[in-house]
Amino acid sequence: MPLHLVKLSVGAISFKDHKDWVAERTRQAKAKGLPAHYVHITRMTPKRDTELLDGGSIYWVIKGEIAARQKLIGIEPFRDKDGIGRCRLVMQPKLIAVSPRPMRPFQGWRYLDAKSAPPDLGSAAESIARMPEPMKRELRELGLL
Image (cartoon, rainbow, N blue to C red; front, side, top):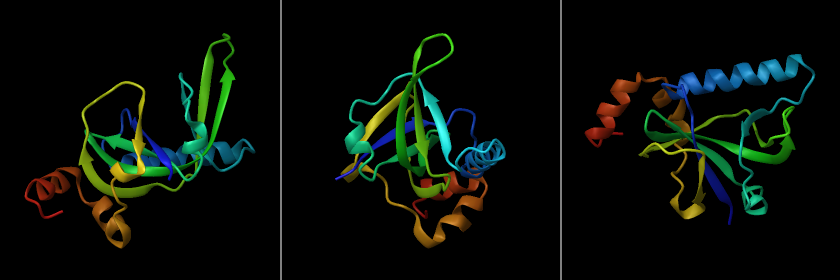
């Protein structure tokens, strides 16, 4: 059973905002002749990499809710130009909307087991993702979404 990570999407205000960010970073990578993957650099390297790479995803927290995920395809420890250990979390560029779940702020990342992971939104994902964020929050609070 795969293991997942949960990470804050710092600065993103909506699913669309994060999706646009991923698309731009992927476009920049392709322009440099790099593979069309989305890479996020973090300070710590996950210790449970084998479980994460066995079908795991990174679930993104956007404005206090787990709202999206990306399939994790690589974990690459490296040293930066100052000799500090870092890690590249390599993901597929496709962002998948998930059933929103509240999550308090935290630093770094957290492990998330498959049983606790929110389900994908499925065919309604695109139309729900295009809704204004305040409308989505109100519909969720009313139990309609």
